[in-house]
Image 1: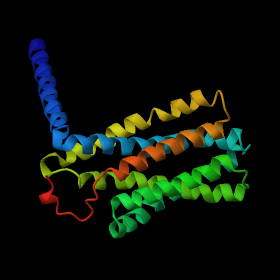
Image 2: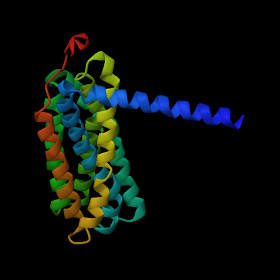
Image 3: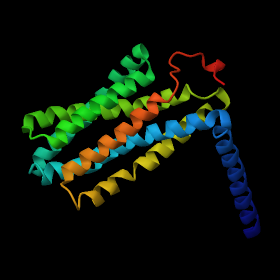
Image 4: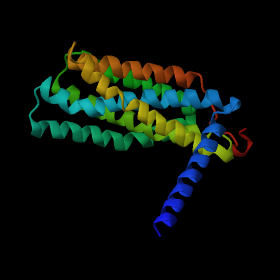
Length: 223
C-alpha cells in the first residue's frame, strides 16, 4: 500500500514535470520568445506599480497624511470602488482604439495620478478623487492583460502563453513593495512609492510599444 502510494506520487510528479517542460518550451520557441519576454515585462511593470500603491497606500494615508483609521477606511473604499469601474472603461476603449493604445493611455494617466498623489501638496478632497482614479486605472490595466496576451499566441499555446506572462508578471511585480520598504528608509515614503511606481509604469509603456497590436485579429490565423 505504501509503495503503491509512493509510485503513484512519483508518476504524478514526473507527468507534471514533463507537461511543464513542454509548456515552457513551446512559449519560449524562437518565434514566440520575444513576445513572451516582452509581455512578461509589461505585466511586471503594471502589477509592480499596482502592488506598490495597494500595499503602501494605507500606511501612507495614516503616517504621511495623518488620517485616522475611520477616515482611512473611507478613502480605501473609494479606491476599491474605482477598481470596479475601471475594467468597464478599459473594455470600451480597448475595443475601439486597440489594446496597446488603451494600455499606454491608462499607464500615462496612472503616472500623472501617482505624481500628483505622491509629490504634490494637495487637499484631502483632491486625495479622495485621485484615489478613485488610481483604483479605476489599476483595475482597468489588470483586467485588460489576459485578453491582450491571448491575441498574441496561436490556439495550441494561447492559454499557456497568456497565463505564463500574467502569472510571472504578478510574481515579479510582487517584489516591488519590498523595495519600497528598503528605499523608504533613506527617503520619504511618498517619494519612494511615487518614484518606484512611475519606474514600473515606464517599463510597462516601453514593453507595450514593442508588442504587436492584434486587436480584432482572427485568432485562428495567429501563428
